[in-house]
Length: 295
Image (cartoon, rainbow, N blue to C red):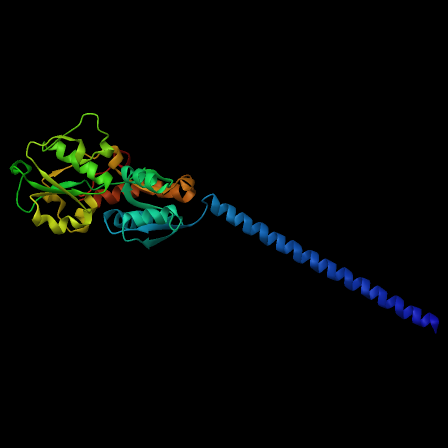
């Protein structure tokens, strides 16, 4: 009897040990699977951190530059396997805040002068990675047909944001209406830098978007290209246009940490592609000034 009981106890022990062995094996297998999943997740995150991703989110504003991006660049990116999504912003400043905060990856609405001014004011780290076609600023009038007709004491409206104020005063110097100080920084011109004003022009600095609606209130207005486009003004009616300087060429802009990302390089390549060149040849009716490196 005692031997029988001992045999039973021995069998239970063996079964218990076997069960423990199986449990340990299952736990080990589960742990290994979890570790593998974590490793895969870390690998995916690392890939995203290095810019190896296939979704691009762009800041979307009203104007010709976003429309050009959507019409000509997005199709090229999609052929390369990217998914491209837009996020609407009410204005460029808000769009840049979103870009700097990481809400979007890229925007195509600003020149270097504006970007640098934003970086300085917001302690941001945006960088330009490629020039793009640009719509020049121009002088327009509802009263006159030539810049030579300017009367004494003329009322002229110009944009009030720093970078575009500067470009418009440079344009007015180009046509001979004013003279600026010789040592002035072209990207930082203000009304205080005007040293000669032979026509006694009265300047009004105002928000760019409001200038077209107020054109009847002035003898002449200076308007940037995107505002001309948004207002539906025929750019061929400009009485004068600016000479686009390097700091006023529109740019593809990203955060500095993303400038070497594969998706950022794909955008740059798209703007430099033969397909984009062909698109511009077929669709540029004189609105666009094209940088030499994109021709």
